Image 1 (cartoon, helix red, strand yellow):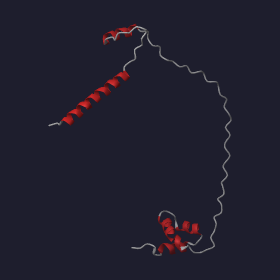
Image 2 (spheres, helix red, strand yellow):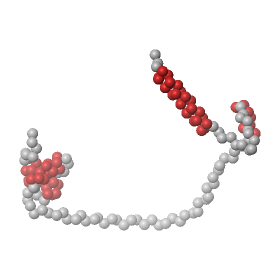
Image 3 (cartoon, rainbow, N blue to C red):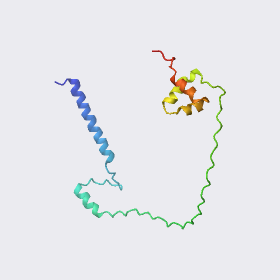
Image 4 (tube, helix red, strand yellow):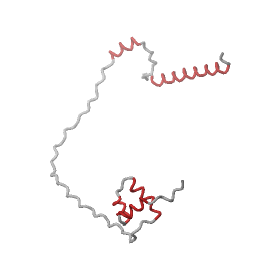
Length: 142
């Protein structure tokens, strides 16, 4: 059983919907041209007969100007690019990886770098990298 509030709300809702529909219809109605005197609204049958009396619209046809002949330029092959020399990496004089880098070394080795690449990065031997990888990680507490 609807209360007074629900019925009033439903009435307002329907009024709002109807008003919105009317506004939308007014927005999309064809605009009538007035020539000083009011033009009566015609019925659909009259509109179809008056459509035959109106002059036929001419289609828009855009012309494209003819292209001027272009001269073919000689294509010069680009010179081969010279390889850019890599700057020499700074070599460390140490033969040991610092303890704070152990986790990074393990991560690099685990996620795609070969041990030789990690050794080259740190300027140490592959044996040193393997030693770091095998060494248990004491920084993690269980």
